[in-house]
Image 1 (cartoon, rainbow, N blue to C red):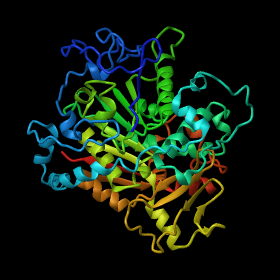
Image 2 (image 1 turned 180 degrees about the vertical axis):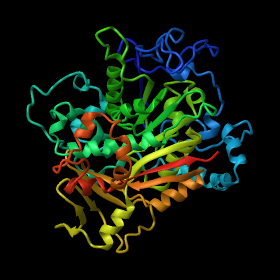
Image 3 (image 1 turned 120 degrees about the vertical axis):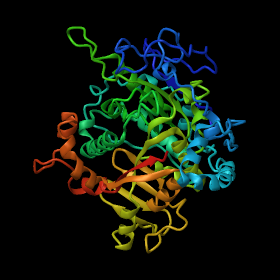
Image 4 (image 1 turned 90 degrees about the horizontal axis):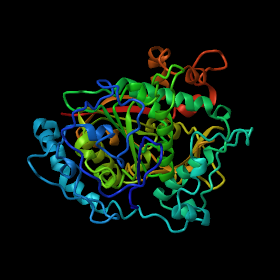
Length: 508
């Protein structure tokens, strides 16, 4: 695995390269950390790399100093290519206390030895391919060569009045591993997005608005802060992409955002988006009307093969002890990549459960295995010229690399690959079936109990009346149907109906 990269917000808006060490911050900071109790810091974008005594991110202002960094996740990797697997059995570990307080957590103890052995081998399948094309190799060597167009403040629409749909430049996918494909795909999405034109002209504009509304609903209903458990109202966004959920985090009122993604260009774009929105919106009377009132930090890393401390601590020393456990962990439209193997899913769930406070929420969106099963059993598919099973419509499609089981039940539940295509968004990128009952059983093993599961259509129909007046009017108008009502229709409805939302709660 490559060395993690990280960026944090800075007052002057300049990006700073990560450093291995920085001065230790005084633990007895007199200022209150929360924007709800102290508005003096509004308008400033703090940096982990500047003078911390003058301006510090929220996680460094936190006075909590719980020593549970590697006894919760595992020991630090010896090299960047290995997966940490050893566990500390210290009775002082806060996580050890979680396990002894609830008898339902005893299953985690029984599976610990098995998990350690699985994690030791999880990295061997994840080496990046060396068969990338010349343009991809250049991006790997200097991944920020296109940053001149990766700034959200730059407007390219004048040069391209017509909308350009996304086109992937990844070739020879069958010879490349999933990590290489996913990383290259989202790096290319980030680069091309600045040349496409106004998003309102996208053929899936309404679909995107619908999906965003679903995420507003999920986060709005299930991201809650418990001040008795933690000082900071903190949010961990695994597979954060370009920061598409930053607005939603402001909507729920968090103090600290932590974003991790495998795509380095997406991480930089997320940082740029945050910095721009953090520093703008002064009204005519000079009053502070910053859009983002929370602190944020971003890091490049693979949360399916590495532990969260190994990704964050080299760039933000002390963040695990100061900002964790968090109130919510989110994985939006990404968990299906982990189902390549059981080892990856277990590593992800280790990161989730050991990052969460008791009572915290694990929130995500994934393709529905029930929909996939229905399509297969009812034979709502066709065979391609090469004999592959394919279903979908003009907006999306699912194509199985191998013949799926006739009963729609995948055995074993891991590694069942298909290619997913979504117009103007995903260009035949490999994904894996997520049998939901398997996910639920594994989550229970890791102390996560199911609280909510619904298809996107059901979520929208049941919850949108409560959120209709709360959401941005442009978002709402972007879901207007041809009959004047709001929601998805026609092929868009089938495309969004392919997904479900879930919420698990951490036992405590």
